[in-house]
Length: 181
Image (cartoon, rainbow, N blue to C red; front, side, top):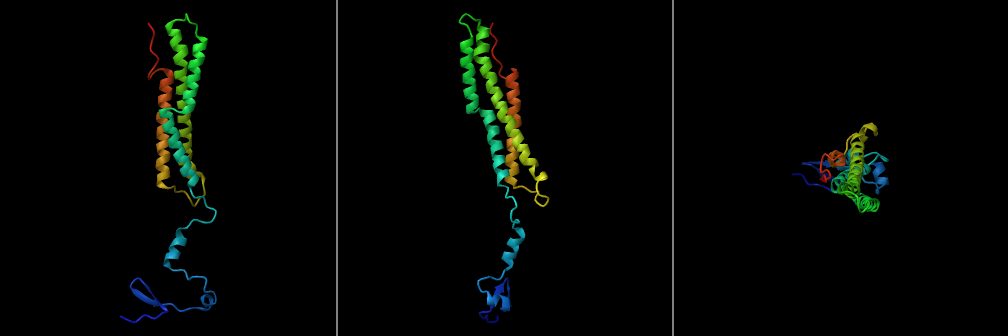
């Protein structure tokens, strides 16, 4: 094995001599780019290129809204409570049981379904926008982070399920109001 001097560096298994040239000798503060720096520059995004953070955030929002559409949210609960109160105020004390059920509980039930459907629709639209966004972006940048696509698909799926359940609940096909006999 040969002796190494101060001017030699080891790259892999072969030793190569580094000879200072006039430009690097005059400017010692600038480092000579090595193979690692060159590889990093090849994979670096151009200045001003979008990082995909907004798409990732929108995907998470889509999934969260889809989950809210299934579990219910504060606006739906408040709107349903308001409809219950309005139904109680409008219903006469001597009204039939069927009328009381419809006015007090039916409208609140439909309001909850409407708010769930609204959250589901927004989740669905947001998820679809995230998924199709690369098609309308910069020509050289069409790939998204895998987790962004996965979370956006989760938001779309939850939105479709929430929208379906909201429609079925509103129409009375799923969990309709009990009939008063």
